Image (cartoon, rainbow, N blue to C red; front, side):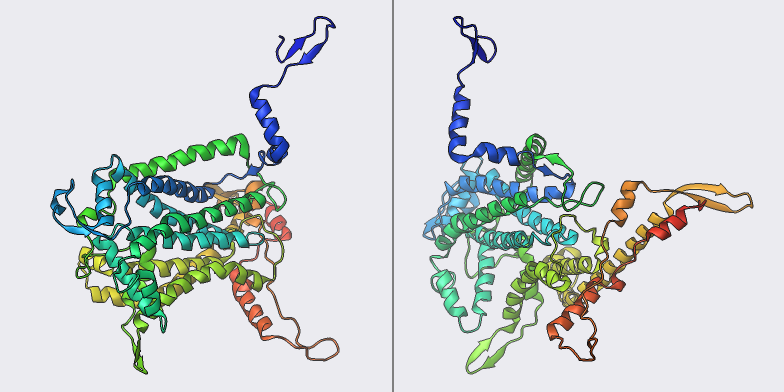
Length: 548
């Protein structure tokens, strides 16, 4: 044999060696699935490099950790509400009456080898998953990565965020400890506040009067099968669309709507992704090992006549908790029925505020009438109104998070809980407006700085004395790359209705929606929302002579 060929001694010619087993398997699969052509077309796909793109990977990897740890916990958890007397390893609870669900949670924590570590990794991964999704969506929002053709992917991501919150609530409620039971009491009261059908919904979900006998058994398949299955499908669809559309990238030389500057999928990007997965897994494992979370044994089993002190949901539900805690206890009585506005209004506002985030890409596309594809990201400073709206939304979330933990804030900072409640009530209306105004002004200031930097260069700190005695600071001109980044953004005129009277003197019909669109377009993208970029003539005039 000579390498991959053999010699026919009778004819003196060489013939190809028979294919190996691996090659045969590859040929068999390619003949039926067409994998070679698919791999050849996509394995060298280019992905740009930027640290913020890792936020989406954190979400993906924490979701994988959730699935892996969840499978382990499923093997030992018993979602039964049948009552038993505990007689296990945790002696302070020996002889206490509890549900089988709570007992199995204690067994996982104290008797299953590695059970407590897996439980805590699972809980930390859930928090990181939701946190990563929110931060990732904010990165997409502030940079305009949701524009055409990625509106559908934004909807997928928003749906994943909503399902992640609901899945977290269902998993948080399964152990049937006193803390989760208090959260279920909160959810039950919110459902009851729904007019007309609230009682029927509560009976359907809880299987009767609160706390019900079937609720945990009903939550269990929803938590481990239904919601994760839907989320897994959305994750796959999300990744397919990310792969199908060119990856967005920040402005820079050689980057436009037709070309991507970065590293190929194989081998560079896949190697980085694999290493980053184990890094995320390692950090979550370290957090689960050293930072205790949800110690159910400290709360005890759930009893309807008890409430834990300082009962707080996970942070992503603090928004809804804060809405209800700071809402005045308004109620209306009519026709023998009571409408609890103090609960129903906050319960309705929570999804409505999140829906406003989900619908924003379509609202902006309608306002701008922009039908083009966008693969270059915006710098947040160049779209100050959008940036201000995002910061206002986050400020509202932060204020209501404080409201959701007003008792904890009061006890730890030695403040009056009533003062905190009134502070949150006022801040709900004041903080978003103030955040919007301040953010917009900061963005405009940064635009002015960029304009000055383009025209006059970067300050070097070097002082020079001119022949006539004047002292000036020497400015260093920017590189072509820096100039491109600072000036590549578009400043198109906003949508306008146009003249109301045509050339023939006839007044044309203008729809109310067109007037609203024009006003919104001027408010969001008009002259007051941007500092004009330097023109070529201005740049040449300033840089043509010795302007120091």
